[in-house]
Length: 369
Ligand SMILES: *Cc1c(COP(=O)(O)O)cnc(C)c1O
Image (cartoon, rainbow, N blue to C red; front, side, top):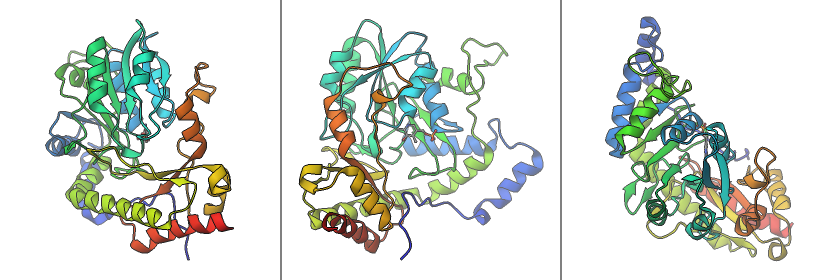
């Protein structure tokens, strides 16, 4: 029996776009906003219903979003510590200071009540995260941001294809970004996007993506090179063709895994659910191990799963506020306890029933071992 990898990317065959890729190679227009990037952006706008720019990576989109929202040296930006390090790293690169807020252990995302406590006169924005593609509390955070005159930015790197109150992600907050990295549910190999309903953010982001240059060759905001390549846009256009079916299949695969985990009913394993009104794409299926009840630590469970050929990850552990790159932080009790017990199980676009059953059965086996 072969191992179950932590991710199993699905990509279109080269044949599907080789003619157009060859055209790009022949004309020499392989990047810098060529026709395929333009087509891909138009398709994304159509899919999401909000102005969208394509990027070379999710991280480039994230750094751009912060700068486009006006984050400058010394600004405080509130974010979770229960996230991929990319989130606070982007704040630091924009010159901002990440101020970590705790999560609600039930939703695994920012607890709006703790965010409120962290707001200071230097706070410029909240950078919320949709962990594993689970939309965070958009409504409560939007209200909070409005009340305090600060921006709500959302790192939805993992949440392309998730819905919040039946609405696709993309148009929430002041701006939202996605990652199209090969490990994500929707992949252009490397890639990302930034969405915003605010023309000023889109305009600034378009400049920042291109070194900060404006149409006259001047530069008002120092930028980066965040441009998507034509070949990535071609892959993205192909992915979009089958996306609505892929998305439905992935969500039902995650539901299958959830069902199998529930059926296995392993003591000491809690299976966080998506909050009401949130239909995540499930980049992974997180579970939380309670060592005293399970009878093994999370690290032992992870090792036991891998030994049996089921690749898992300790996302997100350690929490970012314990990383040396960032300033020492106040304690975050819910984040710390969740980080200590969390285990991310694989979900694939093309997961089979047998694979979902194997994951749940392996967890049970590890407990009995
Ligand atoms: C994947 C991810 C990123 C980075 O995206 P890349 O496309 O790999 O640059 C940022 N934030 C979060 C939460 C992610 O999951």
